[in-house]
Picture 1: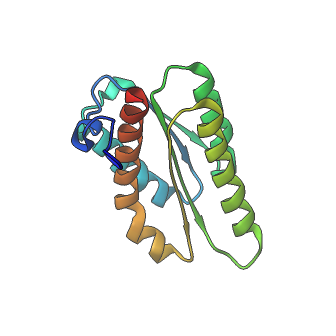
Picture 2: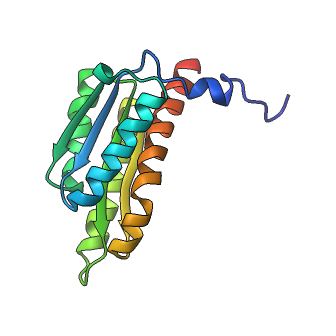
Length: 155
């Protein structure tokens, strides 16, 4: 049937049992990224990922996230990775540089290693927007990582 999903059902894809997940969190804007990480880890546990199967590392900022993701991908032990960070627009071009380069680096890791990488590096205009997104985007990242790990396993 045209358009039919040949993989597992969507609900089955949110089963995190037996998955190993790596998280890389930028420390810059730590109040936001800590909230992202807490929401993400809480959701991973709710989806059945065992606490012992979640590795969480921190890096200085969003530009350092891709190299840590790459190091984790090189290990070959993760079913999915999660990138967490927060970039808030300032008065200079630096925002665009950091947002574009970190995003491109995260995508490159995913494609180079054929490994799902949920990108929850927030790019917002102000602190209020970041606060409004920190919990939902942390949860979303966990769900994306688990669903995509299961999808790729079924393909």
